[in-house]
Image 1 (cartoon, rainbow, N blue to C red):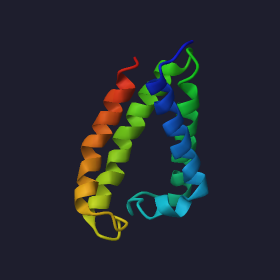
Image 2 (spheres, helix red, strand yellow):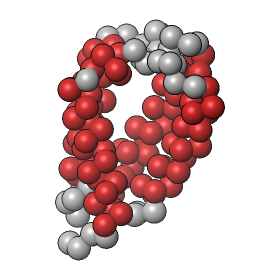
Image 3 (cartoon, rainbow, N blue to C red):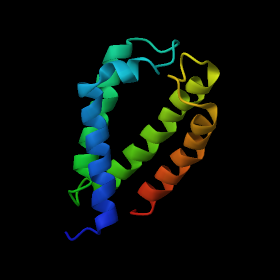
Length: 117
């Protein structure tokens, strides 16, 4: 199948983001909500999910399922974004205005994925 460059960009973006969960897990551990269990396992699991979903976009048989998976994942990740707004430590030193901008960005990413259904 012939995919447009922006679809390939989205796919590669999720694959690279997932790889970074394994390269820099401490960065993700810092932003994990305290109420979630097994932080390290969740960091690796979410990284693996991003990689698998990003790769699955390239196969016609799994593309639509991967898009729904990405949308669900982005909705779940909203928990992390709200948690990062809850305290300076959780915010990892990122200014509040940037953290606030990430909230609508999640919905842009959701729309971007939904666009390919």
